[in-house]
Structure formats: structure tokens, C-alpha cells
Image (cartoon, rainbow, N blue to C red):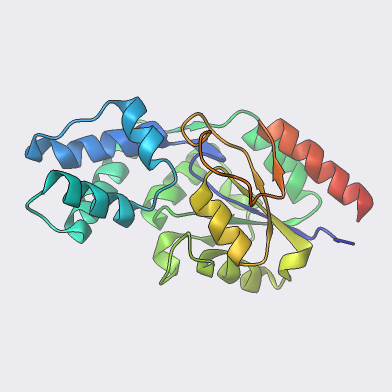
Length: 221
């Protein structure tokens, strides 16, 4: 029987609606090359895809005279600039689920964003204090979909994977959490809804519904 001791949260698309910021940052990267995408087309294709992987796809598709790493660095810098003036919105019920979950479990944030991208948003909404551990792209050698980010968080919390769950919104995160031995609850967003979540232990439509599942797990444990 699972005894739930920790909940590991993804950030982009799960707790914050940051897809528009990522899209606008990529638009600025692509503008000098004369490449444009609609927000819907771009987010539907690249939601949850790691920045470097996105850069590699765009570089190859549009035969850009750059390198994937250079595109990646530009995008991360533009994101920090954009986020300074345009904070992403919190997903509905994000504050409430973090308040509830932190009263019962240890919490970690496991994000594919850089520290410079994630921390200002957490501070803006006063969420950083909920997390005993924050793992960003800067803290790992292999980002999601590799299990390293989740394994690092579990190690920091000193919790075994069978006593924790992950909350994710994309197949990239689902693969990462599953490979780390976690049961993963997926909350698809509008851009990730068509992805394959058959590996997920639970699939729910909102953070409010996710809290219902967590309450059930805590009642059993």
C-alpha cells in the first residue's frame, strides 16, 4: 500500500500558464531568420518539448544559420526579458493545491526551465516557500524526459519513489517521472491534450480534480 509522503510538481503548463511567454520568446529568436508561427501551431507542436530539442527541430526544419545551443541561449535570455514585464498566469487552483499539499506532504518543484526563468515567477506569486526542493534545468546534466531531475528531487527529499507522486502536463514530464519510478498524474493543458498519456497512473482535467485524487491517497495511507 502506498504511503504518500511527497508530491513533485512540474512547473510550466502544470502550475503556471507560461506557454505564451515561451512562444513569444521563440518568435524573437526566429524573427531575424524570417520564420513565423501562429501561437496555436507552435504551442501544439512544442508544448513540453525541452528547449534544446525544440532548437534542434527548428534549426533542421528551417535550415537556420546558427547552432541549436545558440538558439537555446537566445531563447532563455529572451524569456527572462519577457517574464520581467509579462508574468505568466497561475493555473486555476495552483495556490490552493500547493497550500493543501504542503500541509500533508513534502513538496518539490521539478522544472525544465532554468533557475533564471522559474525563480522570478515563483517569487512574484509567493510560491517558493511551499517547496523543500527546487530542481531546474541548471541543476541536472540530463533534463526531462530523462529521469535525472526527478531522481535528484527524491534524493534531496530523502523519499523513495513508491512514497511519492509527480504532477505533469506533458509526455516529456510523464516519461521523466515514470522512468524515475514514480506514479505520475497528468493534467493535460490545451496544447498537450493530444499527447499520449497511456503511461500515466491518473489523468485528470484540473488541479482541483488532482487534489481530489491526493485526498483519496492520503486517506488510504
